[in-house]
Image (cartoon, rainbow, N blue to C red):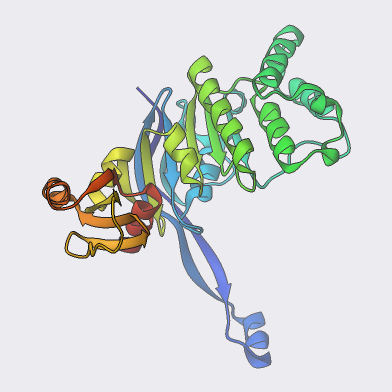
Length: 322
């Protein structure tokens, strides 16, 4: 059952343009020229109940624009988009009570007030019953290990602490659909891991559907079985994360530790790095078994590992081909 339905969704901006210089500046006052910028160019996909889907693409690919259209902040130029059987751009109050949009570089809580005060304001906005509000608030605070941080003015919190209280404030109404736009941006590795664990636990407890954008592939690998790759407003790939590796990676990474120095490994594959006894080779995926057997037969090998292409490299290759 699909909870998010997108068909031929487009967003086109009319952007004014002119040449440099005073003459062009004066001319633009009389007759302004525009060019079309296709932020999102006819994308189609569906997301089922409880899915956690990674929405990947470089800066300017159309990710945030798509999330804003699906959350009702932007009107699409054409096409269809529905979430929870609502048309997002109509901003129906029953729709708004069941979804949330969290943007890692945006601030929604009052800067000079403790987070608890902003939480209480959100309770009033969403019309949450007092007992339900307190139960949900305390549960989310415990899940994110916030403790007394919610009693401090938001301006006194670190970036990671602010992001955690922002997420609690966005989830007090227990939304069924989460649009997360770079929720871990700028955070240290420990805080990123903590937020990933929280998102996974929220999805497990409440069966929420999550559409996640992130430039940190660790977020995607930890949370998403399915990914949608978008570039220049068009979808390049939609499927399992493992399928993305299979489709766009033609090689594997082979790590080998030898028992003696100075061995020339160039005949076995492309030598990516070699430091003492340890070397890393890039080999064709179809030759992996043969080369592994050859190494073990011809050389004194202390240790050997073979891995798929790092997902970051795969995504980079997808963008390059797109």
